[in-house]
Amino acid sequence: MSVARTGEFGLIARVTARLQPGPGTLLGPGDDAAIVAAPDGRVVASTDALVEGRHFRRDWASGVEIGHRAAAANLADIAAMGATPTALLVALCAPPGLDARWAEDLADGLAAEAATVGAAVVGGDMAGSPTLTIAVTALGDLAGRRPVTRDGARAGDVVALCGRVGYAAAGYTVLSRGFRTPVLLVDAYRRPKVPYAAGPAAARAGATAMLDVSDGLLQDLGHIARASKVAIDIDRSAFEVPPQMRDAAQALGVDPYHWVLGGGDDHALAATFPSDRTLPEGWREIGRVGEGTGVTVNGKPPKGPLGWDHFAS
Amino acid sequence: MSVARTGEFGLIARVTARLQPGPGTLLGPGDDAAIVAAPDGRVVASTDALVEGRHFRRDWASGVEIGHRAAAANLADIAAMGATPTALLVALCAPPGLDARWAEDLADGLAAEAATVGAAVVGGDMAGSPTLTIAVTALGDLAGRRPVTRDGARAGDVVALCGRVGYAAAGYTVLSRGFRTPVLLVDAYRRPKVPYAAGPAAARAGATAMLDVSDGLLQDLGHIARASKVAIDIDRSAFEVPPQMRDAAQALGVDPYHWVLGGGDDHALAATFPSDRTLPEGWREIGRVGEGTGVTVNGKPPKGPLGWDHFAS
Image 1 (cartoon, rainbow over the protein chains, first blue to last red):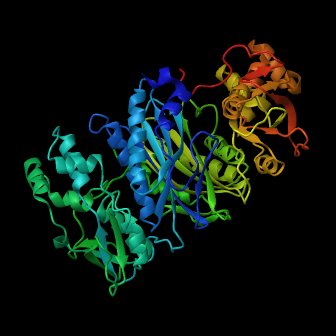
Image 2 (image 1 turned 180 degrees about the horizontal axis):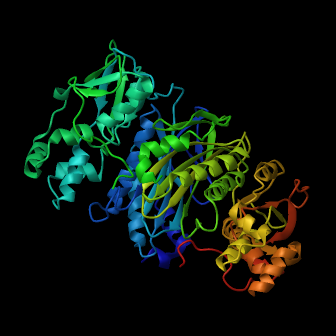
């Protein structure tokens, strides 16, 4: 049944029936606003919009998978501050012909991804639009910790990474060429595996700067370099290219390091740590912070456009 | 200059340069997430999306005015819980040809409306989209108060209203027929005057249920009636139709009470109070809560479709 037939309130009822409150949900969907616990006395908040044809395609991933991706993109931003996600709010703008079932699947994916970190979908909005758009806001709690921003990296720090890079970008390329395998890469694009708990762990271990890799590792490290007024040098040998990625790259005539160093959407966490600290579990060293500006790979500037501009056509 | 030429990061820089932190802004735009004070240990959160052609038209209102409207729609939801707004997050999905100046104007309007209640725009996202879409999330603080939800109205309560109803809907009709006056109505559509402080005041005065009138008074009171399992009867004589609205209604062949009782977008606050309470300043009685179900006007069911379905075409 189309959302035009269920109507706004019918669709809201169908979707909210699928949502479970989380431990921090003090008031869930159905009123003017939701109420979420903020025990720390501060709330961490981030918002991200996904637009059909630009950030997702319904023929490349299911509604459930797109829900996971949309949630992951926002939950990762909360983790990258060193905080624990507590809640999601979701505005769905949908064409009247959208199958209400797809919206239910989307809600299931959003809720399931949120539940992996103890968060819940607590509110939202539905609006008609010619362009299917999912705008998600994530909230989180710092539990008394200092937030890890982008401007704290210091010369001499270690650059470290937790999570995968290049997998989702490789999956995107594979799908865009009309293939559906390797499953490892396609699934990475459809449902990113984000190391959420590594964010608070890095904060506790004294990370000096942190972000999630959403636009490409080198571009995103560039944000840390600029905000912290430092130079960052990455060691290319720190990145292992898995055989499936190597084979796909060869078949498609692509340099796999373009995916690894320039691809977003895996939502790995990248951080800098004082060099005398032991990296928390799951984190690995990939480079060093130095005096100066910019990001280099083995001492040299990266070649070509590595990163993602959301207005580029 | 188009947003495609400024690029995502260029546009973000231009827009964030115009934003001022508020008293509750602990970390503003520029990192993975913002941090907002939540001194109450709870955060009130609501999200609403505005879609071009459906919720706004660029030839009917300026970017600044559309910013005011988008902010008002969300800030009113926070006030309707009895809370004080603290922050806005804004996802702007824009066609590549959009003038960056328009996005700056929008930011100015959002920030100015937020500032009227001591809130600030603390974060956001920019994405390319064929459909200009503004998704806003508002956060707020209850300052220790019990939230005023929709399910607390009791038989015998007084129904009260604070703010204007029908003005924005009348302005919308006037604009849709190609007119630009009366200014009173057109301005009400372009820049709603929301009595934000009346929300916390109602909570302090013991309001039993509250919401903001966004879809039409009778439809929205229907939400209270359903959630509270009560009947609501409205006294039509409680509504004064100003001369400008009466004249416009006559000229356009419209019943002005269709606007007053069925029009949204003014974001008045409607609430129920125990009958022994003195209504706070600015609130006026418009009806009574009784046993039963549904909303009536002078004891009779309202005629015709009064309200707004966001998927209806």
